[in-house]
Image (tube, rainbow over all chains, first blue to last red; front, top):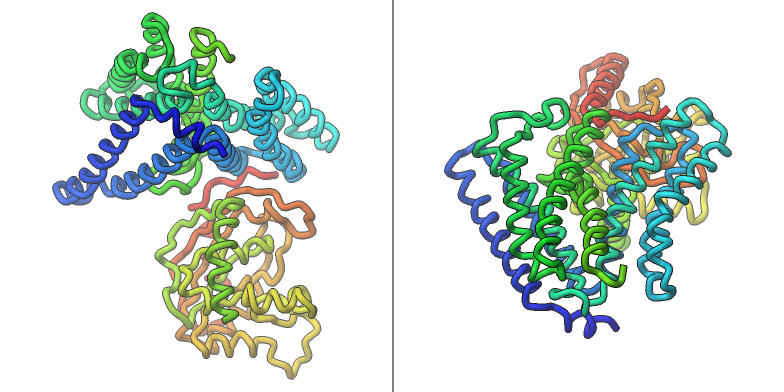
Length: 323
Length: 213
């Protein structure tokens, strides 16, 4: 029903992008076979890490090819898993089980608004306020109604923080797929691909620059392995790649591409250290063991939770007529 | 036939669903027994515990993994009994009202003799959510009967939040199972039980902190 529509928009740049990711996956897989034999004992988690990358790339790539419906369903699942990880670790109270269930319900409603976009024009306007304002009001009122007061304020804040980060912010990725394909050179799927590619590239580039030149710790208490050298090297690498690839994937003018190239990776960095602060506060290293070699969904998603809404809003402001 | 349906039903329906709802994180999976006779002893807070433990095993072992469950709760007759016995694969055990001459553990002993893997909850009941009650001695009598069966302690966390005793709503939370090194029969029932309990308590430190009050 939608395959012929979406297949028509697999543009040159997107095919090129997929080919590039495939090449990186193959390179990484070869490295995962060779490196452990060269330096035994080191690189032990590279194998499972690469296998997980294949699965994640296949899921996201497949959803992008299948269209906005599949992408929305995939990210709804991802949001649910992320929120479940968060609410498992964050402090909640015995009386809050119903509230936790309502928080899961917000995943359906949040992503439902992406589907409702074909039904009525104001769906995006409602999306913008639904989780930040209405989930906030409903959760606060419902918890007051249930009536346990000790820890009330902390728990209201904890639940709302989780829905905004795991559901609302991640939902923007799926909402990007509703950009009309005519507005952008590589289709809506190209916009989503570019966002995910840049944030993941930024993570990898920061890691590589840090390994090579890292000396000065940037956030010693929150994320002791991060260095200024790694953060700045990764940031500039991502910004340059963003600037040069932007004409293929986005309708951005050069000056806007330069601004977004600087802002989006920086947002990713702050998403990353924010999630690190949360994990450190809770006292865990990973949010779960769901993704072998990576940790939990939230560990993989941390930079996207900040980069996605900012990428969406800046694109909408600079270039997209629809939003 | 029924065994095949059970195995694939657990593998293709129950396990994916349980992974989606309960995460099923496991630490020390390689310490689980690869063959029977063996006993898995875990703390107990929720019906979900049984599902979590069943899902830890590779599908080829599922036909011989048998949760020992209270007859007064799971074997009351009708469809529930059939489902518990044939799909979950329980071995019913009488609590409380059994007469003195009757060996309530007979069913479990037969299963061990057949080389099966028993799943037991030594607390005997689910109790208060995410709290460990006193251990009963049945598991010591089982291992005394079958000293060749290693007893693998497992600490389960989180299911008591998803579905505590008497709750009507199931709320998804991730669960963690921490598997410890197997114990063998020491010769003293009470010493064995105390050791088992201490081992399970010690495994708790490897699980993520549980902030639930």
